[in-house]
Image (cartoon, rainbow, N blue to C red; front, side, top):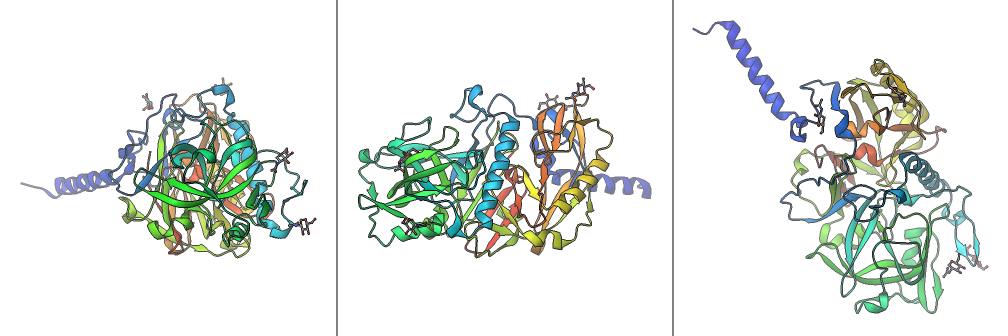
Length: 478
Ligand SMILES: *[C@@H]1O[C@H](CO)[C@@H](O)[C@H](O)[C@H]1NC(C)=O
Ligand SMILES: *[C@@H]1O[C@H](CO)[C@@H](O)[C@H](O)[C@H]1NC(C)=O
Ligand SMILES: *[C@@H]1O[C@H](CO)[C@@H](O)[C@H](O)[C@H]1NC(C)=O
Ligand SMILES: *[C@@H]1O[C@H](CO)[C@@H](O)[C@H](O)[C@H]1NC(C)=O
């Protein structure tokens, strides 16, 4: 008795149901309510704001070495439960601008001109503020024998891992400061060791020598620095993944706002980074997921072959011989609400783009940003505007709304890789009455663009350093 009309209905229904099952919005506990808009996210605003309780992402059954990634200032962090010591959003974004300025000065200058602590004469660029202090995500690793737990900011823009070491001129950290004399597996690198000169590639200026120990000095372009002994000790990433002679900086003179972390985990591309030092075990592959809000958790995983790897779409890393530590990639286009912007690819290629785990807000070439903003404003015109905030100039007052229709934003890379940004990568909320487009424009068309950590939220970001490529898969964490 089936007439053609019900069959069509049935087919439509089945198609709809199939599409519905594919819609990853469903997996995220109603965060995304819209059924199948190819161009819009209908977002529950509350779900984009961090809650005061930690709700960790579920752990997969992944057998690889995996560390939990936590936002330094969120409720999942053991570091700063004390609200007063956490920076405000505005302070955090101002710090973000300092980091970007400092990265730019590292990138622009010839290494020989860069800041160095030659005697007491430090030649630092005159930018004030805090740079790597804004690397907002931390992991906890174990160092020494017996093992001491240390919570470190992780940074794809740095190579050498370092921690504060006793005795020192140190900033305040939460965990006890690492004491090398209490670790039976600790040794310092001597000035005559062939390992000492490797520091040159990691921090772009020559090592020094003090009491026959090789001395590193990391200067982050502003007033943040770490100076100390180049050393090695046992590093435990997890209880089973332990590295006996891990090279790191034992920092005796450290300053800057590193939160109350114990130091920094360097995931850069050069020889001394943890990626290079563990190459035999993990084949220079690592991936991470940064959670959508600071009240959730993500992961940092070493090695390949994870659960989501099938959905990963890759784009090649570009070599940048002047800046071998950074991960450059080829951003070629952006779409807003399903429409590709007319920004010519040359606008992106003029300066180039690198991806950074420590920069919060992505920075785009001036033309690319103004094209993005114009399209976004047009599609958001029904919402009342709010005042700009720090480096964000396109803000809305959503106080009268429970949900908001946000145009999708997609980033396109060479070789077909694409990021369909999570809503948490499109709007940055200071409060319900001030939610802003989470991008900023560079002032100069020659300034390098940066793919920041807000835009990376919820993606499984796979760095296949040996394979010369980086990939993105949606739905890595929530
Ligand atoms: C939005 O999410 C919050 C918490 O996740 C929930 O309490 C609220 O009912 C949701 N609102 C809508 C309109 O779905
Ligand atoms: C450090 O100072 C010494 C002596 O003043 C000088 O010879 C050397 O070139 C300086 N090194 C750098 C990297 O500036
Ligand atoms: C550490 O910093 C202090 C104060 O800036 C300075 O006086 C001292 O010489 C530094 N020590 C080392 C080892 O760099
Ligand atoms: C947002 O809008 C509400 C109601 O329309 C108003 O009371 C409030 O002052 C506005 N807030 C801001 C920061 O613009």
